[in-house]
Image (cartoon, rainbow, N blue to C red; front, top):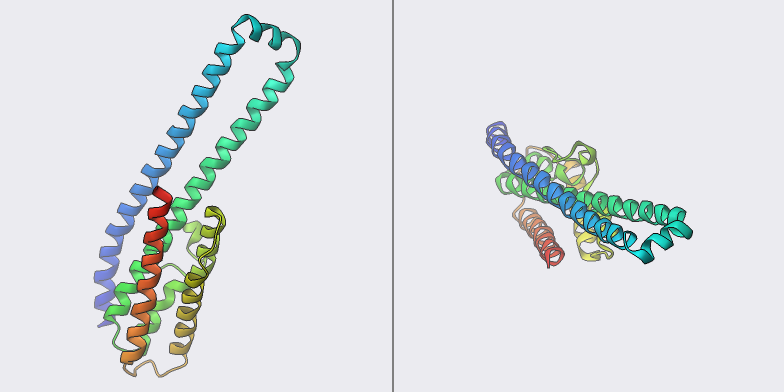
Length: 207
């Protein structure tokens, strides 16, 4: 039964992963173009100033070395901003992918074995958006996300730890036993809380 569910899920997740990857490339490309446009606009203003009489005097007297250093510093900051934005998008999509994956298999789970399989996403991605984050557990992904946005959601980290504990607990039980209704409800509740927190975070980031 699980094998058939896995086949259906993998097929659906391939389409989902393709859409996510395409959006990720689009978002990263848009950010890169935006930063290039900003950089070009600043450089055009610098050139306009340097072509003026005052600019020519400053250029010839004191800004040749300093101006080059300033430009390099600005370029480094733009590159760092692009890297952070790309990393942020990658983390958001990978976390969303993990949550969707867990929720699908958890809803279908009937036994402890199937429940344990559904929660493996807290430790490793079944269908990673980016191979760099495939084997990073969910708590670290959230921690890295919060490092980029500048604040943490302690409740989310606690929920992730609860899912980790639940996965360990299911490993210790008879895999053929039915998944209890109480555990099923708790798992759905915790996964739903993670999803809502991510939606809220993405909404705040876009405002």
